[in-house]
Image 1 (cartoon, rainbow, N blue to C red):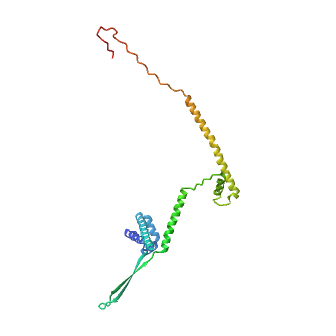
Image 2 (cartoon, rainbow, N blue to C red; image 1 turned 180 degrees about the vertical axis):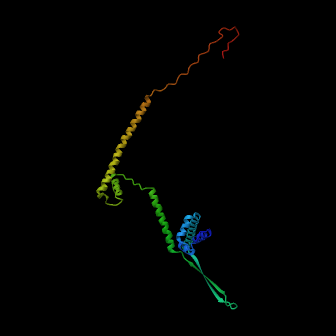
Length: 238
C-alpha cells in the first residue's frame, strides 16, 4: 500500500483514540509492521504526529484515572435505569417505551483506594527525608578520643558490630589516626614559619629609607629697574 496523508491521519486518529494496537492497525489496513516503521522513519511529519497522538492518549488516560480515583476516595452515586417496552398495537413492528425506572445507589469510598493514596504519600515523604539526609550529612561530635576511635571502627566496618575484632579494620583506623596526628603537629610549624616570614618582611619595610619631601624654592625679589626717582614718583615693577 502506498503512503498518503489521508492514510497517515487515519492511523494517527486510531492511535490517539486508543482503539487498536500497532499490530491491529497494520492488520486492518493490510500493511506490514515493517512498512509502518519504514514510514515512521522516512516521514518526519508522520513520526511527529504519532508522538503527539501518543502523548495526548497518555494525558487522557491519566485524567480518567484521576477522576476514577477521586470517585473511589469520595464515594459516588451509581444510577441504574430499567426501561420496559411493549409492542405497539397500531404498528406491531415497532415497540414503544411503557415505563422507565431509575434507581440510585450510593457507593461508599473504597478502603483500598484510600490506602493506596496514603501509602504513596508515605513513600514520597520517606524519599524526601532520604534526599534531605544525603544533602545534610550526619555530624556527631564526641568529647574523648576513645569514643571517636570506636565510631571510626564502626564506620570502617560498614556500621556493623564486631569491627574491633577485625585486625584489618583496627590497622586502618590506627593509620588514619596517626595521619591526623601528624597533620596536627605540622600545622604549628607551618604557622610559625608564616609568622617568621611576616616579621622579616615587616623589618625589611621598616629599614627602607623614607623619602623626604623636597623643599619649595623661595622666589627672590626682582631688582628695581628705577633706583633713583624724582620726589613724588613711585616705581611700578609688576
